[in-house]
Amino acid sequence: MTKLNILVIHGMGSQEQYYSHPMRDEINKWLGEMLAGQLTWAEVYWADVLRDRQKEYLDQARRHHDLDFISMRRFMVNSVSDASAYRKNTDKRDTVYDDVHTKVDKVMDKLDDPAAPDRPLVLLAHSLGGHIMSNYIWDRQKPGASPAGTSSFRKLETLAGMITFGCNIPFFTFAYKKSDINPIRFPGSKLPPVLDLLARWKNYYDPDDILGYPLQPINHAYSKLVQRRGHLHQLEPAVAQQILDRQRFHQASGRFPQGAARGCVRGRTVIARRGHRPRRSSPRECETGACHPPRETLPPTVPCISWLPLTSPRDVKGMTNSSPLLRRVNTSR
Image 1 (cartoon, rainbow, N blue to C red):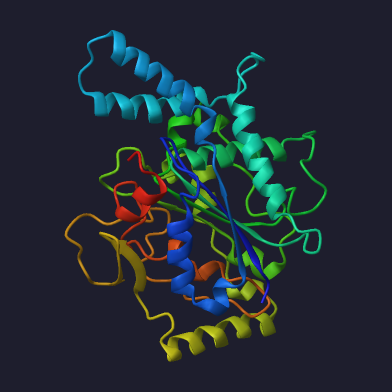
Image 2 (cartoon, rainbow, N blue to C red):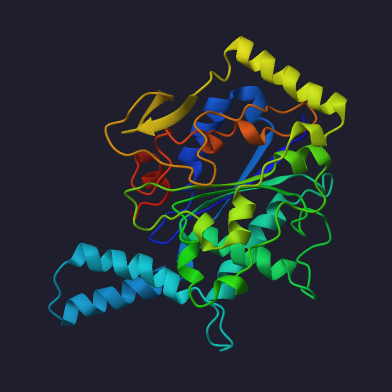
């Protein structure tokens, strides 16, 4: 089975290093030892780019001025100012945009294996992290852009999955007319046919999360991208049959029960099944409206992209800004 690189990036707010480890451990436990052994995880930690400046300002403001609603102010300073500070700027004194992307570069270098230069990459991006990775990819896909590396992986030509949750990319599109907005090119251009077929951009949001939004309404280009679906008839018959055979095996073995997915509620792992109504609104995958795990599992020669719990149905609990699992990823919300 081909190994898979997974890059996790946090959103706005005061994060701590190793924020992604609880999520990583939960997913690895869900997959089991054999499949988890095929994944290489790495996290981008960029909160320290702005953290000291934000803290210094708020401490000074509280010391010398009468301020109410301190918790709300702390959220605004530590979170919303991340979004306002992270922007591309011609002023050479403003280095936040490049500093954050340098953090991504270092993690990509860490994941880049000279022995496997075409290893597929899946991105898990929370909140503002989705916008950061979209910009990072866009900058490297521009004509004439200097490559960050020579391998297909480093050129993002093996990008096989985008999973965004609590995404606020729409906020950064309003400066342009709809017709002038273009998403990144996805999937990577050097993926083998079977991976190109299975590549997905899945976007999850919660109806109660005012900072998480669907991407389809941005324009037709985004709608087409996140609705992207491959079909088995596009593959060689032998490969298509292999996918179907593995699907039947896993259904028969009960490894991936129809309509079931793991979530995390109040720190406990649970199984959420289709038809179960949680006590509060559940996360939605607005781009597809899927209500069950992918029917197509993968042959031994490709990584387990479709098996990641983050690509599970809209009744999964634990995948939004307001849930316990992501509070461990982004503690500011």
